[in-house]
Structure formats: C-alpha cells, structure tokens
Amino acid sequence: MKTLYILRHAKSSWKFDGLSDHDRPLNKRGRHDAPLMGQELAARGVAVQLVISSPAVRAISTATLVSRELDYDPDDIVVDTNVYGAGKEDLLQVVQHAPAEVDSLLLVGHNEAISEFANMLSQEPIGSLPTAGVVALQFGCESWFDISKDNATLLFKDFPKNHK
Image (cartoon, rainbow, N blue to C red; front, side, top):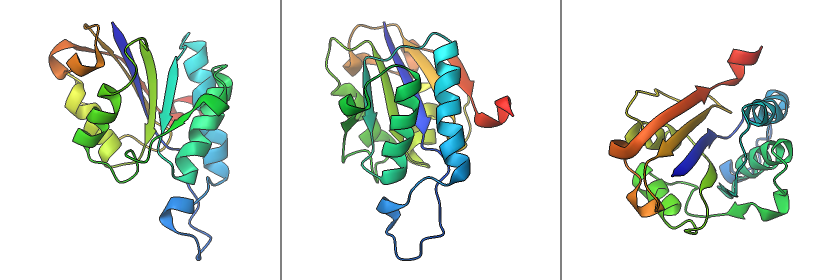
C-alpha cells in the first residue's frame, strides 16, 4: 500500500511588488494555516516518510511548517524543481519516481495542477483545493508507478476553514 498526501501551499503574500512569483512568502494567514494543517494531520496519526516540495518560497515554507508538526525533519524535505510550474502529469511523474521503500509521501505544490492531480487520482471528486488544503489517498499497490484512480481510496480531504 502507498499513501499520498497532496497539499496545496498555504496563502502567500502579494504585498512585495518587486518579488518574482517564485519568491513570494507566506502571508499571516498562511503562517497560521500551514502549522494548523500539520497539527490536524498529526492528530489523524499521519506519519510521512518523504516530503517533496516545489522550490517556490511559499511551498517550501508550507512544507517546513507542516513537517515540524509531523516530527519530520525539515532538512530532509526534497525540493523538486519539477513541481513548480508542473501539470498534473508532471506531478504524477514526480511521485512515480519516489523511492520504492517509501510508503507514505507528502507532496506540496501549486494550483491548478495540485488540484487537477488530486482529482485525476481520486475516485471521488475533490474540486479545487483551497490554500493549505490537503487530500489523502491510499493506493492498493506496492509501487508508486502503479498508482491510479483504479486502485485509489480517498482517506480524507481537509481544509483550514474546517478548523476555524
């Protein structure tokens, strides 16, 4: 069995005119929501063996804040340039190339692709993930190369607004 947690980065700031999209930080709400969602995942007993993040500042910040709540060392986050600007098929390739021994993976990325990716794999409609929204899918297979909608089970989807 493989378990995939798909997380959209938390809310980012637009107040710094000179920053590139890649360099935008989290805003106050994002800095609140990311650890909140990490706490909610921890409360569900989630333990991840690998965290893969987009290299964008807002994604790495989200991955770091969530990882701390899950007792996952932020220094072990794998920053994958293929996640930034990816399409859903690109995200599938990123996950398919995760080490075989990893059974539980957290992927942190961006909309629209992250929502499209979740919907591509889930048998139940997910819709558009809000910032810091997470979807958990379990797959009835032993290899990341074999994950698909056909062997997926939606464990849960959770959003920050559920906890306000």
